[in-house]
Length: 401
Image (cartoon, rainbow, N blue to C red; front, side, top):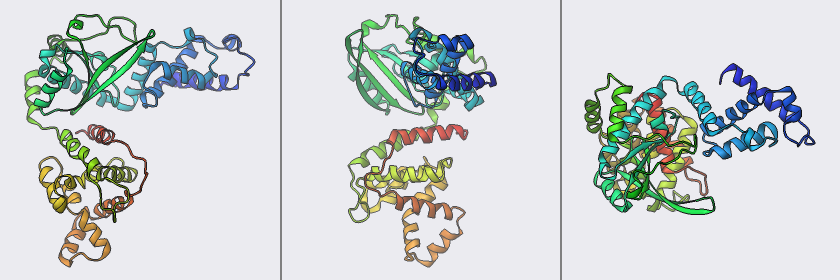
């Protein structure tokens, strides 16, 4: 936030919070002292903060909440900032908090969009939203419009390519009329939201909820031309080949974690319930202790995935399926997490005990054991598998992965 914007935010926040309720005829008294333009800026900044931090996801709700916080709702609808003004302020937050990484991330997201669009060519995909316009921020999805009278065909293609996805059918009521929209959420290096429209809508001009004008969108050919102009030094074909050569481990992690919801833990040692719930609890415990340690957090989340494959040999099963997808340190922590319990109980053999103690990751292994023990609470509040994986992906990007 700039110094001037911060000062405007603080001044208006204090002034309007002190304003008596009797002054309910609008902004007359306040506007005699202050500029309406600066008030709009203050509301836009607060709404942008709410949206950047993912407290709110809708512009309408964010600006209303911001107005209430700053001036107790004594702002007429026409005096509120536009969606475009808030979007611009969100980008201020993104530039401040994400720096040059945001620019690199945007380029990579556009390349990822092109890769999926080429796979979806039969459905005439169009890139829309923040990745198209450049208004991305931490946690942004890649939004595509695709056109098919049968969403099942889209899912068949994704499945054939080994991509994981969920289908969401969402009812939206507008002007008193309800419509069902089909969204396909694809989980890849970046997450995608595909909105499926009927084939006869391929040439329909969609309006932006932010600007009120026709949305900016690009076909495959248009995106290729845009990338060539925007990044003149880019070897597009080389980037595509390189991306295909490097497997993305996160779909594998998700595929291993989701079925654990149906694998019950031992009643004696795991009163909390299923293995997925336990794994998410351990992840939360680990994040409280080591929020920036990507390898440690991944071990915490994946330490029991083998229980969905072979209960009798769950550690060996996990290491087999994770081969080549995790670092040596993460592998060490998973491999020995059961030995850490034996070490604590004093039942571990002398040779293995000495080997573990000699490891530079010994203290981390014992911390993982603490998290494992703490992650057995019935009714504990945890996030979802996708939220945990999103956190790890974002951490990987911050660490330059």
